Amino acid sequence: MDERIITLHAFCSGKGGVGKSTLAVACAAVLAENGRRPLVIDADLTGTSLADGLSLRAPRLPLETRDDSLQLDALPSNVFYSLEETWELIERRRLLEDVDPERPCFVPFFNDALTWQSPDLEHDCRLDAISWQHQAEPRVRYLPSSPAAADIGVALGYMYTEGHGGWPRRLTWLLHNSLQQMPELTDIVIDLPPGLFGFTHATLSILSYLAREQPLPEGYAPLGEMGVRWRVKPFLITSQDRNDLYSVLRFLGPLKAQLPPLTPLVNRLDTSLNRIKEGAARRFPELESLGLLDLLIEVKYARTLSRIFVDGQLELTSDVRQNVEAALGLARME
Image (cartoon, rainbow, N blue to C red; front, side, top):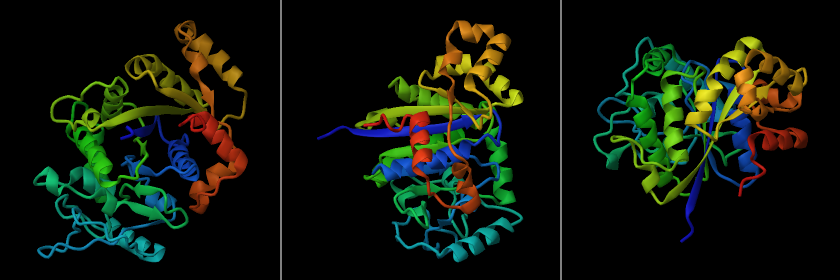
């Protein structure tokens, strides 16, 4: 039996607004065009939801008879709401003044999967049932985050608390479940929150274990013991803005030591990459001496890529696709 290989693409950044989510979505779109079957996990739980930026349709789930909450552990119905119905249900949830993690309502979000308390592993939530679908590209599955203020309030308390291990541990079990429930799955794309601390840092630590093929700590899912070989492809996105670039470069050495596959990408350049490197070398000569500045890669693409979240569509011109493939190393995948 052939060994199953799962590629885990993770996108992080020093701050928001640098094109991290755009590249994550474009990565999944290119993977699908290449015949692969990706799952996009929108773990940026700060309020910018892929359900708003893309033309995503929510799955229709049965309701619990006791309280009308969503049955997250039900088998997939393979039935999706229309775009108009999805938007209406998102707004109904957004208007909630409070949220009960034990009673997910209206439409399922990644937030629900993180906070849902399963009585046992046999009855955990079904990611194949709660994942969303793009109106024009059914080959990509999505787990969008919630834009509701009540959900964001819960999330912020977890994401930016150093030392909190509950959600990172939970994430490993969700990855574990996705492999069991989606036999066709080939790639997982994670869009992490901006900033390199809290939940993002903990997730990068998990990736470092997988990259080194070491078992995760006790209480985490046995991801390395599932007959699966993990191929880890993390990306650190920055812009040419020195407020962003230099703050990211300060983290580059320690992050690279912890997670060797980490690739730093400079996005949205209107000058040459060599000029950016020259300025960074003067500011951080130690990085130049270690050869870390040579690792910076420019993301080249036409303006059409930025229209993914303007039009809500996933249409990529051939030159954009080639540039995304080159920057993210997708053309070199088996």
